[in-house]
Image 1 (tube, rainbow, N blue to C red):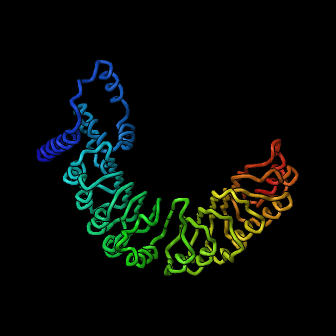
Image 2: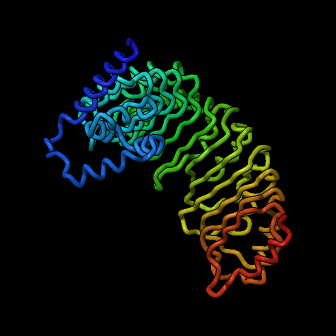
Image 3: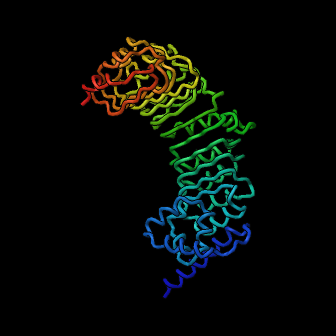
Length: 395
């Protein structure tokens, strides 16, 4: 009887939350007969399938589904549907974050918020989400959200920021360092100059470097007009946990610091506005490096020396991708293939070979373990049949 009473009480609470989520909507007429028939047919689907479909909806949409019938109210009340919260200012009313925090806040594991302002009260939801492990913020302003995350979300592991302004202040970064020891992934897309609070930028930089030293994955995808200078890499402390790095650069000399700063790096992705220079990259001194991905949007030609400077000494590499303008003769293409590590399983050249590689050059034997091959940009009429000979040595 007690269990039954608790179940009824939970249904009442859920009903209240679901109805309140839509208090800003205009009153809609009841569903037409055809709609009711369709809903009835949908209800015949397996509960597991319906739950999976509902898991793709944001919380406002879940609230609307809950109003259809008691069946949908019970279905949308499942705890697993409230572990991942998605709130967008275009669909959420200002009170939604607070209501979620009052009801299932302790169950929340992931929060994704888009364009929320102070009136949406996201910090109140974070304060009630002690079990939160992942936080994604897009197009938001100020450091209040991150300061609350530092105070209340000690289990936070992943932080993703996109086009956010003045998020990193002295207080917000200090809180993440002090109270979020499990934070291991940080991703940022946008302008790096917008990310830091202007008044704190000089004080925040050392703290940010300390935060990076504790991560296992760092992604800094900057605007095409911005890049990380070599001094940024030089100022980093040793980052022994960092295994995955994505950076935007123009000056390749910064990567020469990777062996001393990130000795356990396994994945390196580079967005660049310049082909690799003759700088001594020393990627061969990264003993665990397995994947290298380079995207060059400059449309400048990659020479043979530039490609070889990246491949030099990386014996453990098993995935290599270069998306850029590759300007090689047939003989130079053969030299690149011969320089590929023997353990390579994934090879992709996106871009253009400038019509200088003939089909006969494609016979050069490829690494024996190759499992994936993508090469674009050959001259018109090249069939690629000769790749069959090159792949014959692949086991």
